[in-house]
Length: 189
Length: 132
Image (cartoon, rainbow over all chains, first blue to last red; front, side, top):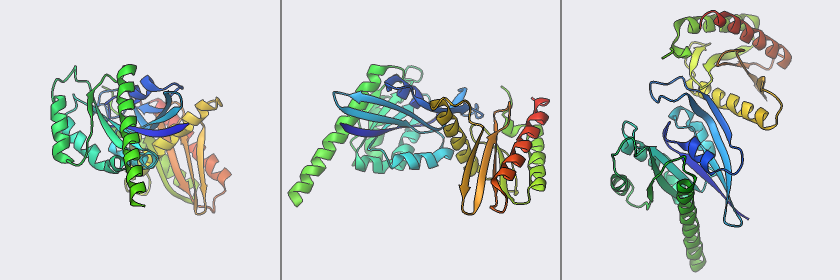
């Protein structure tokens, strides 16, 4: 059975825990605490260590889903979990004060995950904030990291089918790139 | 909106007093902090802010709770990290969304350190019941 570890990253309130709950076939391991910082993001709880879920794709492909805390002060968890992952779903909530800045910051921090596997961007809460449009995300990615090819989706993190499509796209990207790297290695040997 | 505990002057003051009492009771105490469940420092001993340690203690507490839930063994009462040069003990403040995390030198027995930390947590709990 093929196994992948996929990270769900993004700012606080982007929908990482919700996305993992939408996807997971097992009861999600959650580490939520009461949110003392309601001024920054007005939600009752926040993830302080990780979320963990699992999903099987196809007949024999198991994917371990790790959600990381959105707040930078928990970046030691980002480091711990980043090392295990081969790909990342980057969730950005369109109604955050500066979603394109958040996008660039997360892409910078997790750039090596792109080198190792792949990244997809999933934009949430587009029904609440209509802009930036998806094309602006794509343009921002192209301008900031021109060597990265990163698909961008608009999703509702509560919607299992939308999250499955996002995840499957990422897994296909990861596997395609792994196959290309493998073929190049063989050719060079 | 309720004032967060790490910005509540009375909670900060009583927390600091409790940590000072902990230091008096246990001379091997190297470091202690009282944090919110989500990792903001309310009071810290040794004068400086240890924000990173507060965040890590919060993650550790939440992971301990998750393991206890997974294994269906009730709630996690305390967490111990026993190392060559010190013991970290952390436990919840009863009835409050707060955690006490303390580092003791190895000259203290784990039992004594745990017992003192527990007494301290209980005192903080009693004092804070009347505040918020």
